[in-house]
Amino acid sequence: MSGATASDGTALSNEADRFSAASEQFEAALAARNHPLGRFLRPGLSVERIESLMATTHRGTPPAGASGPPLRLPEAAARLWSWHDGVDTTDLTRVPGSEQLPGGLVFLPLELAVQNYQASVADFPWTDLDDMSPDWFPIATMGHGDQLLVDCAGTAQGQLIYRKLGDYNTQEDFERENLPSIAHAFEAWTRLLVSGDWALDGGTWTYTREWQPELPSWY
Image (cartoon, rainbow, N blue to C red; front, side, top):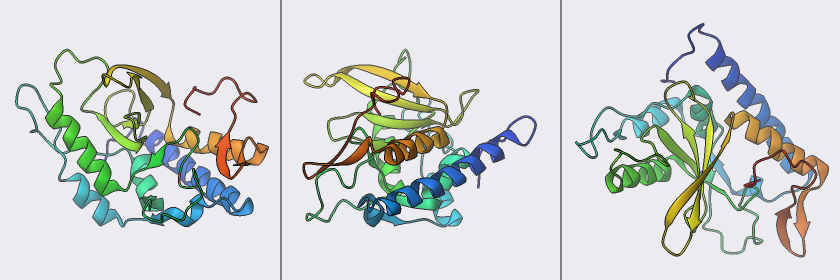
């Protein structure tokens, strides 16, 4: 899979391997608790399909707008869509929240993530914009505009960024919270399941985070 490598040639692979282990544990925890999210996870994509979709992206480089070289996913992010290609939200019989990650996030199919990314490149001038970057690629989203993104370049490659609307009426004033990696997020979600803090409550899958207050608020 395409993507930058760490200077010593090992860190990126190790982080990707950590994600692979974390995603296996997460899926096992879903199955053990009969969480319906597992039913909505789409089959994973081939390496060739991931590379083909990402080849259609263009990092907007000011002032050219939607132009520039394709964005390259970190290895752990590529493995995310090899694991599963987002969730299927077309089943209208689903239990409320059953297709969501904690916090109401919906894991995007890669094709839709590419479309969302390209819309952002077209919509935003990247100059003087400190709450968004053409290096950030969407992993999951909420209907009102919040996004979970992965940093695809630079020293923060692989870091997750939760971009939250500060004012849902004006669609402005974004706030940000960061997390070290995709693997870290999956490990935290597994702990929520195992602890019972992410569970079926009154017919809706919901969660509480009081048990581990050091987690970002979007958990």
